[in-house]
Image (cartoon, rainbow, N blue to C red; front, side, top):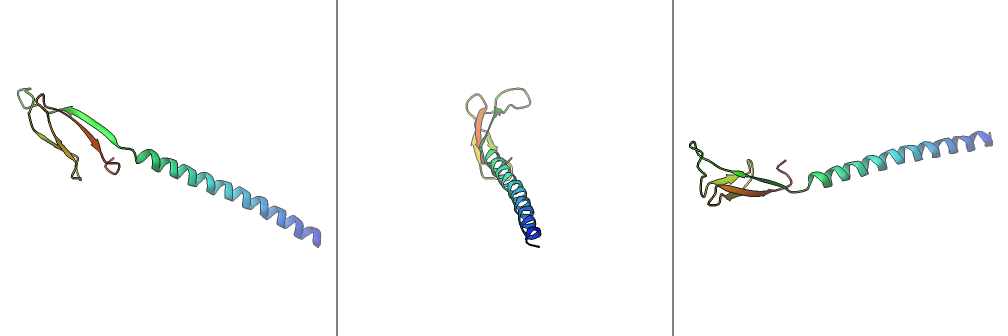
Length: 86
């Protein structure tokens, strides 16, 4: 009977280590995914009108946020978006 208990303890210990390793791997994977998605994105471009001329001072906004910028004299803009936008 004593031998059976020691085998059960060993079996449960290795099973615990197996599941603990899987949980640790999952947690590390989720943390890495969150760190990658939390980075700012840079969006740039040029605003032009129907005739192809650049639009000076046009406001470019990130949809669903209060982040925005005005275009320069050539109609160009560069915008750093917050991490929660994409």
